[in-house]
Image 1: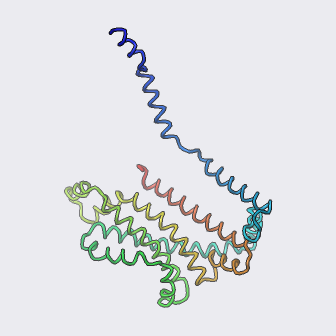
Image 2: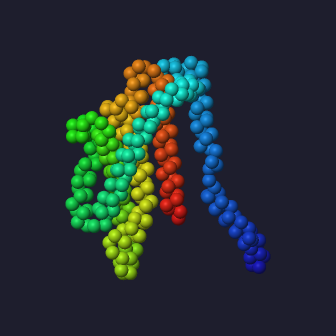
Image 3: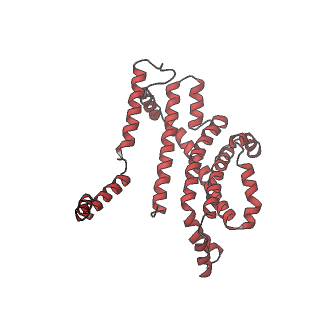
Length: 277
């Protein structure tokens, strides 16, 4: 019997060894992908793309090589064409995104905090949300005339709905105990919203802001293709009509870069405002 117990004890690892094993498992689970992994993926795709075009597998008319796109893009940059169109698009997307996100956060907070606002406006929000926003552009042109206002309005509308719905969901998921505690200590409605509800809802709000960023780019390009003479969408449509695929791809890559910068900026802002996340 004693011999069997001794063998069992000997078979069990020592306490320090088990602790080290647990630390190794935790370190493995927390191991993050190196920062250069994303860059390697992009470089690999670009090299494969270049190889396909150089070998003639894909005709240049259908898909120009990355080197050709860079060469043409540099020429467009030197002539000022890229800068002119990018500045026009940046103004529209910045103004529309700011208006839509601000309105979405404010209305979402009101919907989630006040029951009577929820009862009145929530059915309106969910009934308009499924409508394709670009389908309303001709109506906005009729109402607001030909100019920047219809494009800004359509972008703001596309941003508004993801933000308001996510803000509403975030407010509804705030722990009621936090609100009751704030009210117990004498906080009024505005103070509760500012100090409790809004900070607790920020993770969900940022999720809506990121979704809205993609919508804003889609609506920007669509609006510029329909009713604009300057902008990245207008430039893409122009070169598409002329069958100048390389110039067209320059515009597509500009949109990709703009979306990447937009997303990274939101992530940095989120890390700054939500250090605990």
